[in-house]
Length: 354
Figure 1: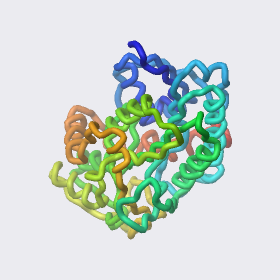
Figure 2: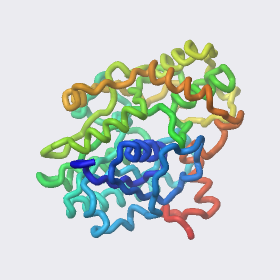
Figure 3: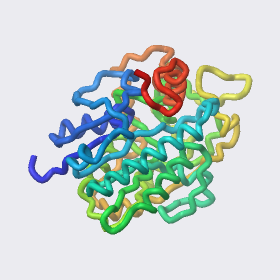
Figure 4: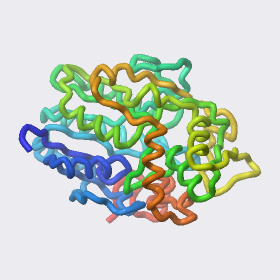
């Protein structure tokens, strides 16, 4: 196809990257991908649109390779996960900050558009509702602090010729071949399918903006063609999809005819224990404004939480799941990363051990 930018996707074999690359292949984009394949074996179901991934570490991408592309989408990193028993989390996240800054500088030298996948979790303990891109950030977890630090690095190195796009992505839901069940809504749906019961490990009163994965992929594509004259930060999601956790849990219960229970210290199961929640109030609490993205892409219609869940229920209906899927470390990113380190498949610097 003519006039389409040449795309490079880093971190192509994760939850987001796999879905994005399927889309790019289907749309006939000229694109290449790289990944160190930490999660390549974490498949829940087969990939439909197969694509070739180069086994490369983001730290090894050089200028000669990078300059072939018009757009680089930066997905390498450690996904958020409520597990609080992972050792050396700050050091792990510091590594991701360092390599993100280095490849951003390479993009700057080679005139490559840089799209960074950040997160609305940078708002953390939100003091107000309808938080905008200019609202004060109050990140709580290592993950969200890392995202905000990288945003600040990008702002520091940006100029009139290097104008990164920072996407603050809402809490995702929706199915991907390389699935994550450390995301609330997919976990709730699978609980309902397997047990007709959803269990919360907090009071559920915290607010979150939710975003259907397919919509995020569409936003990435729109950003390929965005002519921003300076660095831009964009909250990605829809005002209608700001919900309290308990309300989306109740919605899933209603849609699936399931019951809602609460975990407590005497009622633990194979689910992740979240020390930032501690069976009570979750400090991570943010309701977000999406006026800016509506101005940028006025014709785009985001999928409602209800319609996205209905789509996923239809997909789940034909998907065979084992009863222990929610205790399988493959679908919980930091659990699996811990396994890779302890089994000496990667070293303490996140380098693959050959």
